[in-house]
Length: 313
Image (cartoon, rainbow, N blue to C red; front, side):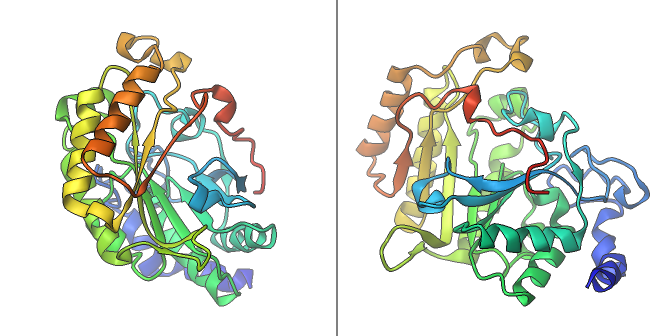
């Protein structure tokens, strides 16, 4: 089986996207196939940092047994406050062959995962497509979740059509000033909204299991509140409501955690207050958002950040 995977991995169609790479919206043009690192920090060798059951996603993803999360190393967005900085920019992770990635998906299903949750996968789409195709051939039957910061190209997303069941994108900013300051991506809103439109086109309205407990197909858009930015959050929610209404779920998150690497950014050195979060939730209710999720309790803790120690790889 590994010989077959090696043949797939060496095929021209498989490697072409890593030459003058344009997989993400950065379009950095790195020749990752020769070992050059793209904006994402990665070459054409697949790296991941963790594969395990995860119980902290939205209830219709985590269910009772957990979501089978696979955290990939590197990131094309690079938010300065990233809670997963150890893998997005810190170099954590280990090489994983395409064949082994397929095996990991099957192992997570055997452990009881309700779905396979691909976290920050965009810069490794060619590997992931091959792995998912092989895993399906070997019997993988649970939904595939594409978990992304949304700085994606429509063309890359279209290449995944038919393989992804659930999209889990962020919509982080409305303001280009904020997206430039915090993610060095002034065009973030335009790029992300085009990407989300493509995701909704592919999946259509949400489909749940007959008991209504688990999502099988559809889109959940996440929005993370940042301290002092409730006005921007309200603009995001209004946009989603006006453009998608009940065709998507909206997850309004208060888990922003100020970590040491934001020390030079005074506005980010505190958590979102209870009143800030309540204000945004009241606004969501006022504009008629009913299909969504909120976070309760003290979710802004470093303890909620997984250990990127190579578990499951």
